[in-house]
Image 1 (cartoon, rainbow, N blue to C red):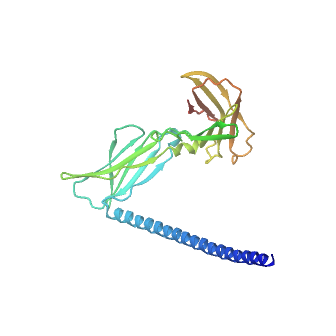
Image 2: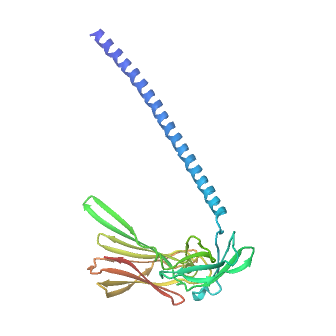
Length: 301
């Protein structure tokens, strides 16, 4: 019995030593794996950096070899309050043949036809063009829909859908330059810029949420602090509820708390509970202190 205990103790000691060595080797292996992983991350970052640097060099080389420089754009906001800003473009033609004609082409919004204006030669291969467009001054709108979906009593799945922030084509300006003579016509790549941000100088950004929950839904609209000194503030928010295109009711959202500073956001919201839901779409209507009214569909069945 005595020898058996000794054998058991010796076996336990040997087992402990083996386990310690195994754990030590596992620790070394884990350190090596972490080291290899860190090395791979460093290599990836280095490759990404070199790739980005190479792409920048290649882009700059292509631009230097191009027959036309980058097109600069400045916006004269003197008439912006009327929604008719004048946009000034300038660029340089690096190799201009005699008797060549330079034109600026543009279209705004969803129209398919480009307008064409002759470019003004200001000397040394520099050209300019001025255009006036009609821009809709309105807030940029961001909308989310949150749906709570019950799979079983102990589990709730929340689905958040981001709706269109704003009409992607409504305020898009497309433009390019051509140089032509009797022998050839050269055209620059089409450039595009979104001018919807001009409306935010007056009406800012609106963030709306339609949150469906177990016993109803909540609708909210938040206007972040003003970005300019135009003095436009959100005064009223209401939701128009439709059923198959027919207006059923219009209900006002409530201002959560008084706004005491231009640096504080405005938050309008209302919780609708235990309501017989018979609506196919919601439209939010917002009214600013200058009387401007805007509507945006934020939910459709």
